[in-house]
Amino acid sequence: MKPGCLHRDLPLIQDADLNGKIVLVRFDHNVVKGGEIRDPYRIDRTLGTLFHIVERGGRPIMMTHIGRPKDKKTGKISCRQEESVEAIVRYLEQKLHTKFHIPRFAADPEKGITGIDTSINLAIRELRERKIGGIYLPNTRWFAGEEAGGEPRETFSLQLAGLADIYVNDAFGSWQAHASTYNITRYLPSCAGFLMQQEIMNLSSVLNPARPFVAVVAGAKYDTKIRPLYAIYEKVDRLILGGVIYNTYLCAKYDIRIKGVSAEDIVLAKELVEKDAGHKKIVELPCIVESDTIEGKMEGGYRTICVKDFRPGSSYGYILDIDPSSFEDPEVAEAIGGAETIFVNAVMGYTPHFSAGSQALDHTIDSNRHGMKMYGGGDTLQEFKDLCPGLYLSVMDDAQYYFFTGGGTVLTAIEQGDPYALKPVQALMESKTAVENRK
Figure 1 (cartoon, rainbow, N blue to C red):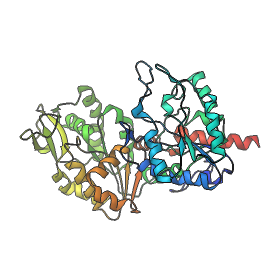
Figure 2: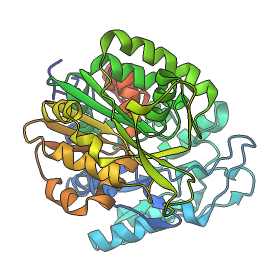
Figure 3: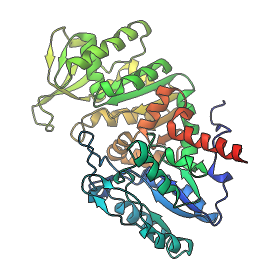
């Protein structure tokens, strides 16, 4: 398939009959922290789909997940106010000058919301009569059936399907196969929204990149990034690491110890070190920032150290940032400056106190004026915006930049080697096949 093309089996919103229909649309508006919106970027990216639904005569019922209300150990679901959709609805009402309704359902203190009851019917009638602009369901992860298996999931999926005539998935960042992203497609005609389509098309630039291809990857834990990291390694020409991933790599390669890096992760990283000994794709950042504490940037409590000074058996404090001088190193500057495609899923420092490395990275990448720069992930984008606000605003409409709304989804697609292997995307394609077979 050519880069930029959509698979012919992916059903698209522009081909759907929306006139007079109740449209259940799944967004990834997971941008609420402590009851406030940190950055509305992911909401704004879906306004085209929402406008299209209304412009073509559809009436929207919207939904998203927020946070992680379910305790993985106990299974308890907590419906906390700070993880409600209210902040999103307030933002949309101000942005679109219309009124949205949030249904209220009884919640069990242990199980969350056990189902959608008939109290929503009045709001749906008002939606059809255009007395309200839309309905926004409570946080999908407040519902017991969203992440459950078996009968609870199927019951919730059927209840969702009973609300609408058609389903639209515009939640690229929600790659997990949950009831509201996966099972729902079995019960309603389903299609991909415009953001979903655009993200899939731009993924082809990562999966089939113009070369040289450079990836910059960081993370707070090594073990959770192993599989996507190895998948990225196979695709890139050069790889730059940051965060705990880089610290772990340095420990494994130079036989040193860095505070906060586990012995188990060092053992895992030795495989990457051995792999790179032959391929030499990893570009080392030569100067890093050591700190005595992670509590903040204490005067006299941090310093720049150099990789070339490492000695086997040495121990160091916390490595919390990349020194900006690293990006002036000839090998690093050449790798970034000569790239035709750059993919970034990285915050280089332990923010907010250690941010100089991330700032230097973003400005160095921007100095490459010919390559395609692609950023993936909410944290990556948020730090870009916070640390380099002027640069962020200047490149938002730059054709040489693209900002994905879901970094985890991009990494999963890279690991699988195909955006159409993502479970929610597969479900949309299977839904189209099922509909065609019924004709």
